[in-house]
Length: 251
Image (cartoon, rainbow, N blue to C red; front, side, top):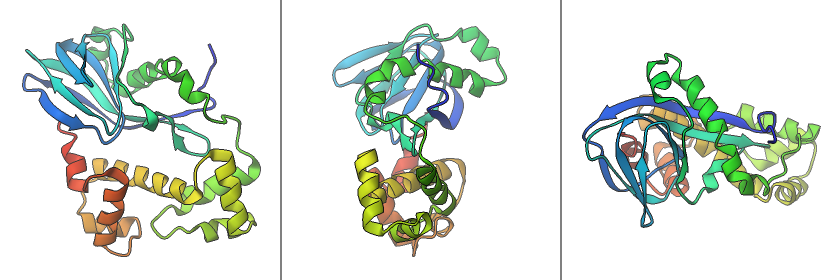
């Protein structure tokens, strides 16, 4: 099996422990890619007419943006969270998932339940997901970025906010705006401005899930002109408001 650990970066946006007998959500849409590691109990995921039984020891990966029903007949105990597999120059590989994945017998429920370091176990389980998405990997160039591309990526990561312009990046790497945009789209199949917006949105989503901040503070943190422009950007990128986005994380 190919080792992708040197080509991909696994990012856990958050990880939580959950146990409840009141787990029932109908027509819910995840705002990011979610994983469940079932520790105990029983439950179901109903997705596009296909029902998955949630069994201890199994991992389930739920795609972002697609509607599904979540239920338990008795109670459910699980470790869950949001994750991304980042590929050069910073794309999220799993944002393109279009179905629910069930990976059976991935871990020992008793070991994970008693383990203090659940994030490390979750990471180990998520790496076992890679063989199930080989078709997505084939769509991307996983070679090490060139020195110029790495310079571009570093500049974006360092200066990522709502005011970052393609012209500034082009000046930094010593290219014209037109040549850089054309070269980037040819190599990565994505407009550079779209890439900047995707990266900015990823950082904002992670921030609002982990920081209890007023939205005008978030707008200021990411250098938006005002709170209204921040709302407009967020709704365009996520098809929901920040409040609606956070409402998708009660479980």
